[in-house]
Every structure is written in structure tokens, then in C-alpha cells.
Amino acid sequence: MKLVIAVVQDKDSNRLLNALVEKDFRATKLASTGGFLKAGNTTFLIGVEDAKIPHLLEIIKQNCESRDQLVAPVSPLGGSADSYVPYPVEVQVGGATVFVLPVEQFVQY
Image 1 (cartoon, one colour):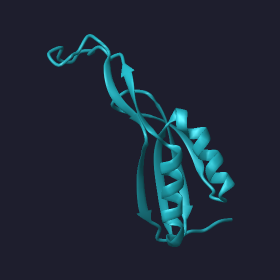
Image 2: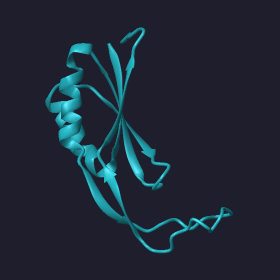
Image 3: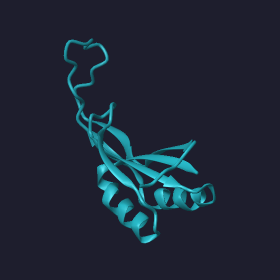
């Protein structure tokens, strides 16, 4: 058994959740915030048998697309202004960051 932690952009979270439910994967959905862009993310916690990991990863890949987006930088508060860029920059957002962890024990009451 594995615990899959998937961090996805908020724009992709409902589409991913619907796909997971449709394919009979149970997930816990948590609101989270990214450290780089300070933007909203959604973190999914999914317990799954080892044999279903490839199928789950494919569902995540199909529903969490990366894309380019113009982002207005956050001004440095108390930090160095040397690296501050005062105009919007194009960054890649979306996609998914996925961690697959072993589960020592699983109990459901």
C-alpha cells in the first residue's frame, strides 16, 4: 500500500477530483498555498494499492496540465530589492507534484 500526495493548482483540482471519483479512487482534498508564487493549490492525499499506482499517476497526468502564465511579482518586504523584478514574468504553472510514500499500516474504522 502507498500514500500518494499530489499537489496541484486550484484550477485543476475539481477536474482531477471528478476523474478520481469516476475511477473509484478515494481522496482527501486539502487547501494549500505554494511557496514560490504564493498562490492557491490543492493537496490530495490518496491511499492506494501498489498495483494501481501507474493508473493513478496517469489520471493525475491527464488532468493536471502545466501552462505558461504571466505573474506579477510580489514586492520584497524587508528583503533585498536587488533581485526584485518590477514587471510581470512568464512562469510555468499547473501540472502536479506527486510524492509516493510507503504505508506501514492502514486501518479504517
